[in-house]
Length: 338
Image 1 (cartoon, rainbow, N blue to C red):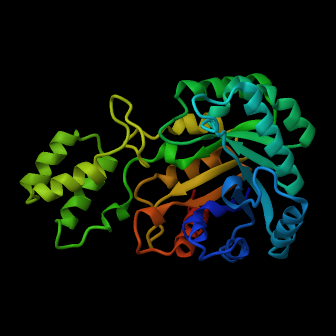
Image 2: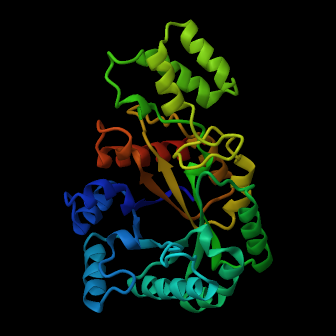
Image 3: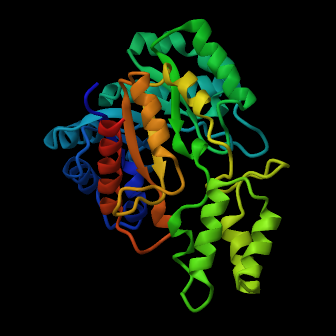
């Protein structure tokens, strides 16, 4: 493949969409203008009447994306495990809910339906005949803090190997392969509150080395940092996955699993190019995009990569459409250079 196939997940515009600053047509128009061929919609966020939109809305939606010459690529859904007080969904409910979503995705023209690991491998296997009948690719999202070596994703990989079907697969989200916090993680702090240049130095060391946190803290203080800097480092930089499996953060100090990414790539028709910041120099501090794009090209990846910007929740200084444009440019530059 000479060029990457770009998609944009409309979720990347979600901050402004939920505030009423963008309409659905606005984000579809922006998607085309920013250089994407296709798009992903997160159904509970932007599908009116979800999980059962009416015919009028579906027809209007199809008219909209056709107006901007866009390809509907991925219909993203969730397993709403907390739907009932006091219990999780049982398997019959997970099956019925997913089948319903798949049928609507088909009607709207999507080819990929992305669910999440609460679906469970044994339930996903039971959905294969429905995916085959509808001509859909049903995919589970691999999202941080999970990695390809997480037990449940080893089970998914075994399922994919055993069934060897183009109708089952994985959507790998780059949050599962991040190395540390983005460059913008300190933007919220005024320059006169902390020693920002020194904190960025410590942040880069945290992201690119295995120096223990205790040693980084000592270095921070030895080089002129104070108690405020130490607090900021602990709350904003030294976070992520710990030895006891702490969860709930958006980035992780892990060893990016390049070989796990390579193994799962053959079961991928779509992936989430998650990121929190791309610089004007087309660099992304928190994720080694160059390394992963190289693997994609070596393995002759034929699917889409979706630009998924989530930086609006971290820094107020960057516009989502500008960041999305930079991410697409970065990917194209990397694809041509490897």
